[in-house]
Image (cartoon, rainbow, N blue to C red; front, side, top):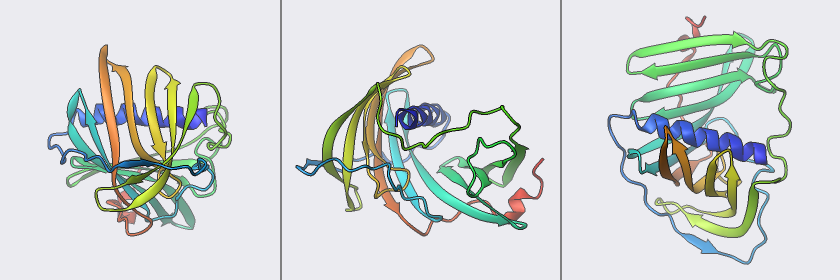
Length: 232
């Protein structure tokens, strides 16, 4: 799980940097609420929601940029005879999508990966095939906690839209990022709430991410099969 937290921390850094380039801020995040329970912490990483069409909307507030919202989507597309799956990120300024062959790890040698970006009417698409030894082969991304991760217990979180989920809380100190994270296996992408402190470009940055809404179906991709026609 330490690897999972490290990846999510990297995602948070990228999100913070991206929010600084956003021209239009979304509405500020609202605190969905927290209630401690006596229930034992759930293993939120055991069976996360990953079916195509599921989505989660996250509000980010940070001391270094304006508030902004991100919608993350699980996407599946069939290109020729091959099914690809991946994650799409939508912001007020555009969308991005990374996909690879379904059933394979993105780092497996020989796996084809598509990377697309869309800004207004402009769509950019690139593809690559991973070569042997160019990327490390990952183990189970939902491994048990190791050093740098402290489990705090269980609770509940309610979104501004009235959806309540059970959460497991962790405190982390990994890769220069210190924070508290709440996760739920009931939510796509599992992240429900976080507050972190890190250094970005030599400045101390405090960031908060709060789940605004989510669903297990209904997400519509900004990219069509035609978007892939001009990939390199």
